[in-house]
Length: 92
Image (tube, rainbow, N blue to C red; front, side):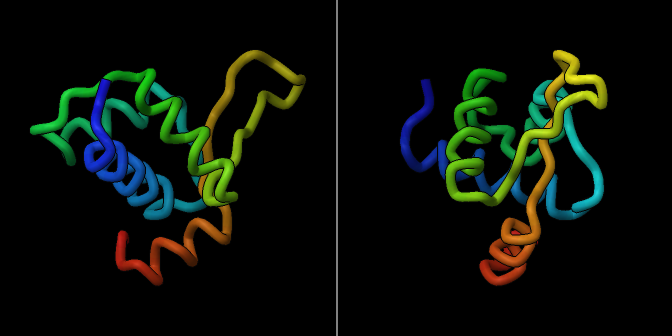
């Protein structure tokens, strides 16, 4: 379990990753792997990534993308609002 300031760090890192390539979508495992290099001092897992994504989705900064045939694979992608928010707050 991570604390409040660490949760904020994880959220910012996820937005940075997703907004740098706003046309790409990412699996949770990919986001976890990419964020580990950005946050070497924070101990967290994929569950924390999922919680952060749910929070960011609630703010309409990211969205879920499901498979073309309604498959079980869920990927995450930044929204236009997320890119604007990141640029405005200098996350990217």
